Image (cartoon, rainbow, N blue to C red; front, side, top):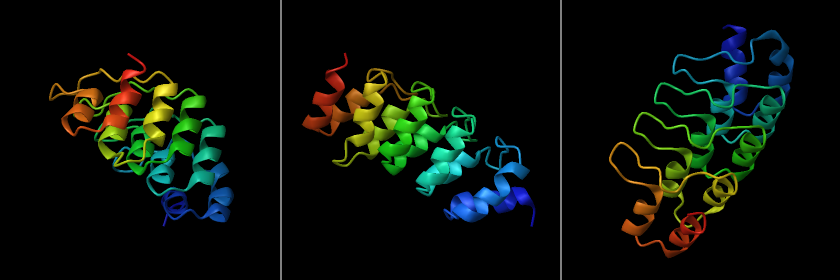
Length: 159
């Protein structure tokens, strides 16, 4: 097993001690076979402490995986406003689109299911509620389609 495999495992399973032992021995922006960096992995698994340390250490916040998703998309998918806010405060880009044309706000809106914390966080950092994806739909279009009045209210405050 390589040190790269070990540090990805540490991020995946939120193994802080192993992460600390290995972080100085690998390139912080190393990618796995899915074009994910360590921040993708930590965010996907909810390893908040590791994610925040990676951000502090200067990891590429806007790395896109093979599906075009950034760690911010992953935070939106996981409904993790803490990690989303940390990424955004450090300069993460709200408007990067994945392979389907979805920005992180689209991902947050689609996955909110009544939890608007990431939607709200993204809007505070000027995410665009009117950006249309490859299917021609914006987060606001989606909120209207499912008649989510709270989300419509949030999204229209920024227009």
